[in-house]
Image (cartoon, rainbow, N blue to C red; front, top):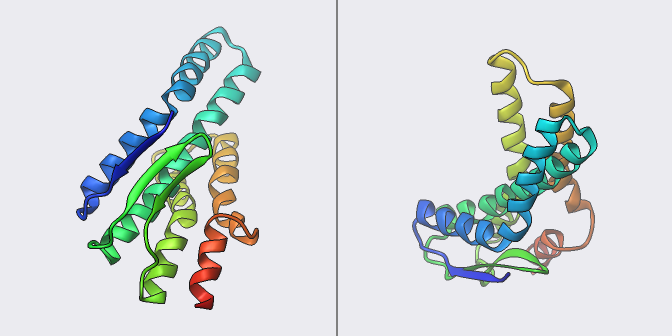
Length: 167
Protein backbone atom coordinates (compact mmCIF):
# COMPACT_ATOMS: atom_id res chain seq x y z
CA UNK A 1 0.00 0.00 0.00
CA UNK A 2 1.18 3.54 -0.72
CA UNK A 3 0.71 6.54 1.54
CA UNK A 4 1.93 10.11 1.28
CA UNK A 5 1.24 13.06 3.56
CA UNK A 6 2.32 16.68 3.49
CA UNK A 7 4.18 17.33 6.73
CA UNK A 8 2.94 20.09 8.99
CA UNK A 9 5.51 22.69 10.11
CA UNK A 10 4.62 21.75 13.72
CA UNK A 11 6.83 18.88 14.99
CA UNK A 12 4.07 17.06 16.87
CA UNK A 13 1.62 17.16 13.98
CA UNK A 14 4.34 16.11 11.52
CA UNK A 15 5.32 13.15 13.71
CA UNK A 16 1.68 12.10 14.09
CA UNK A 17 1.00 12.14 10.36
CA UNK A 18 4.26 10.26 9.71
CA UNK A 19 3.30 7.52 12.19
CA UNK A 20 -0.23 7.24 10.78
CA UNK A 21 1.02 7.01 7.19
CA UNK A 22 3.63 4.36 8.02
CA UNK A 23 1.29 2.30 10.18
CA UNK A 24 -1.50 2.47 7.59
CA UNK A 25 0.77 1.50 4.71
CA UNK A 26 2.36 -1.38 6.60
CA UNK A 27 -0.84 -2.66 8.25
CA UNK A 28 -1.04 -5.63 5.82
CA UNK A 29 2.27 -6.77 7.34
CA UNK A 30 2.10 -5.82 11.01
CA UNK A 31 -1.50 -6.85 11.66
CA UNK A 32 -1.03 -10.53 10.69
CA UNK A 33 2.48 -10.56 12.16
CA UNK A 34 1.13 -9.25 15.46
CA UNK A 35 -1.66 -11.83 15.49
CA UNK A 36 0.77 -14.64 14.66
CA UNK A 37 3.20 -13.44 17.34
CA UNK A 38 0.44 -13.44 19.96
CA UNK A 39 -0.93 -16.87 19.00
CA UNK A 40 2.48 -18.51 18.69
CA UNK A 41 3.59 -17.02 22.04
CA UNK A 42 0.44 -18.37 23.72
CA UNK A 43 1.08 -21.81 22.21
CA UNK A 44 4.73 -21.72 23.23
CA UNK A 45 6.08 -21.90 19.67
CA UNK A 46 9.47 -20.25 19.94
CA UNK A 47 10.56 -19.91 16.30
CA UNK A 48 7.36 -18.32 14.91
CA UNK A 49 7.25 -16.01 17.93
CA UNK A 50 10.86 -14.89 17.46
CA UNK A 51 10.43 -14.40 13.71
CA UNK A 52 7.22 -12.40 13.92
CA UNK A 53 8.39 -10.30 16.86
CA UNK A 54 11.58 -9.62 14.90
CA UNK A 55 9.54 -8.40 11.95
CA UNK A 56 7.50 -6.14 14.24
CA UNK A 57 10.72 -4.85 15.82
CA UNK A 58 12.11 -4.04 12.38
CA UNK A 59 8.93 -2.15 11.42
CA UNK A 60 9.06 -0.22 14.70
CA UNK A 61 12.71 0.68 14.08
CA UNK A 62 11.79 2.10 10.65
CA UNK A 63 9.11 4.23 12.32
CA UNK A 64 11.63 5.53 14.87
CA UNK A 65 14.21 6.14 12.11
CA UNK A 66 11.79 8.19 10.01
CA UNK A 67 10.51 10.01 13.09
CA UNK A 68 14.10 11.08 13.78
CA UNK A 69 14.33 12.70 10.33
CA UNK A 70 10.92 14.36 10.67
CA UNK A 71 11.53 15.70 14.18
CA UNK A 72 14.93 17.13 13.25
CA UNK A 73 13.56 18.69 10.05
CA UNK A 74 10.64 20.31 11.83
CA UNK A 75 12.82 21.63 14.67
CA UNK A 76 15.67 22.87 12.46
CA UNK A 77 13.72 23.98 9.36
CA UNK A 78 9.97 24.09 10.08
CA UNK A 79 9.11 26.07 6.93
CA UNK A 80 10.75 23.59 4.54
CA UNK A 81 8.10 21.92 2.39
CA UNK A 82 8.16 18.16 2.92
CA UNK A 83 6.12 15.08 2.14
CA UNK A 84 6.44 11.77 3.95
CA UNK A 85 5.88 8.82 1.63
CA UNK A 86 5.82 5.10 2.14
CA UNK A 87 5.32 2.43 -0.52
CA UNK A 88 6.56 -1.03 -1.44
CA UNK A 89 10.06 0.33 -2.11
CA UNK A 90 10.55 2.05 1.24
CA UNK A 91 9.72 5.07 3.33
CA UNK A 92 11.19 8.53 3.48
CA UNK A 93 10.86 12.27 3.64
CA UNK A 94 10.83 13.98 0.25
CA UNK A 95 12.11 17.55 0.56
CA UNK A 96 14.55 19.99 -0.96
CA UNK A 97 18.05 20.09 0.54
CA UNK A 98 18.56 22.65 3.30
CA UNK A 99 20.80 25.61 2.48
CA UNK A 100 22.66 25.30 5.80
CA UNK A 101 24.96 22.26 5.50
CA UNK A 102 25.11 21.72 9.27
CA UNK A 103 21.32 21.57 9.52
CA UNK A 104 21.16 19.25 6.49
CA UNK A 105 23.70 16.90 8.08
CA UNK A 106 21.79 16.99 11.39
CA UNK A 107 18.49 16.07 9.67
CA UNK A 108 20.13 13.24 7.72
CA UNK A 109 21.92 11.80 10.79
CA UNK A 110 18.85 12.11 13.04
CA UNK A 111 17.18 9.17 11.27
CA UNK A 112 19.87 6.51 11.68
CA UNK A 113 20.76 7.71 15.18
CA UNK A 114 17.17 7.77 16.51
CA UNK A 115 16.75 3.97 16.94
CA UNK A 116 20.12 3.76 18.75
CA UNK A 117 19.12 6.61 21.09
CA UNK A 118 15.72 5.03 21.80
CA UNK A 119 17.38 1.65 22.41
CA UNK A 120 19.92 3.19 24.81
CA UNK A 121 17.23 5.02 26.76
CA UNK A 122 14.94 1.98 26.79
CA UNK A 123 17.72 -0.29 28.00
CA UNK A 124 18.66 2.16 30.75
CA UNK A 125 15.04 2.55 31.87
CA UNK A 126 14.53 -1.22 31.73
CA UNK A 127 17.62 -1.77 33.89
CA UNK A 128 16.42 0.86 36.36
CA UNK A 129 13.01 -0.81 36.53
CA UNK A 130 14.43 -4.18 37.48
CA UNK A 131 16.04 -5.51 34.36
CA UNK A 132 15.33 -6.63 30.85
CA UNK A 133 16.15 -10.13 29.58
CA UNK A 134 19.61 -10.15 28.00
CA UNK A 135 18.27 -11.68 24.80
CA UNK A 136 15.84 -8.78 24.39
CA UNK A 137 18.62 -6.23 24.94
CA UNK A 138 20.88 -7.96 22.40
CA UNK A 139 18.18 -8.50 19.76
CA UNK A 140 16.77 -4.98 19.97
CA UNK A 141 20.32 -3.63 20.07
CA UNK A 142 21.23 -5.40 16.84
CA UNK A 143 18.25 -3.83 15.08
CA UNK A 144 18.75 -0.38 16.64
CA UNK A 145 22.49 -0.23 16.04
CA UNK A 146 22.04 -1.50 12.49
CA UNK A 147 20.66 1.90 11.55
CA UNK A 148 23.82 3.94 12.28
CA UNK A 149 25.96 1.11 10.88
CA UNK A 150 24.03 1.50 7.61
CA UNK A 151 25.84 4.82 7.18
CA UNK A 152 28.91 2.79 6.19
CA UNK A 153 27.21 1.83 2.91
CA UNK A 154 26.66 4.23 -0.02
CA UNK A 155 22.87 3.99 -0.16
CA UNK A 156 19.90 5.92 1.24
CA UNK A 157 20.88 8.31 4.01
CA UNK A 158 24.58 7.94 3.24
CA UNK A 159 24.08 9.21 -0.31
CA UNK A 160 22.11 12.19 1.01
CA UNK A 161 24.81 12.84 3.59
CA UNK A 162 27.59 12.68 0.99
CA UNK A 163 25.67 15.07 -1.28
CA UNK A 164 25.29 17.53 1.60
CA UNK A 165 28.97 17.35 2.53
CA UNK A 166 30.22 17.78 -1.03
CA UNK A 167 28.16 20.71 -2.23
